[in-house]
Image (cartoon, rainbow, N blue to C red):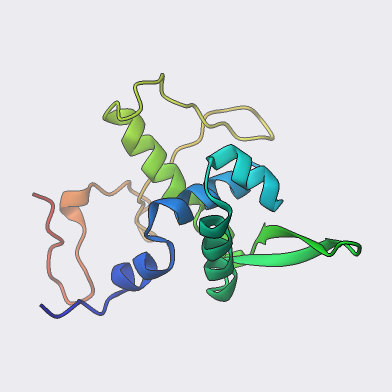
Length: 146
């Protein structure tokens, strides 16, 4: 079977495994050091090293030295990494909507005013929210929603 060469496949090659997404969740939550991420995730050091190196190589995270002796690094989101915020929010909201965790849904709020945030697909021209059934690709094919 031939693999599709599209943006979703390419993105999944970078961030599509469980640990990479959980590492990113941790960095978005303010965990930047190796030990913080390892302890939060309960991940083996070799797995975390592999995921961090891959995310750095792919330009999602950057490695920033914070100590000379011994040399130690923090991991910070790049612009490409910050652009993944809506993806993680969508995954969280989908998990909450379908009661995946068994926990109460998480409410994310705007840090400035405290109001809940929305993560919506909106038309750039008419500014309407767009339902999945009304999305087409540039070749005018309806995206499958069933």
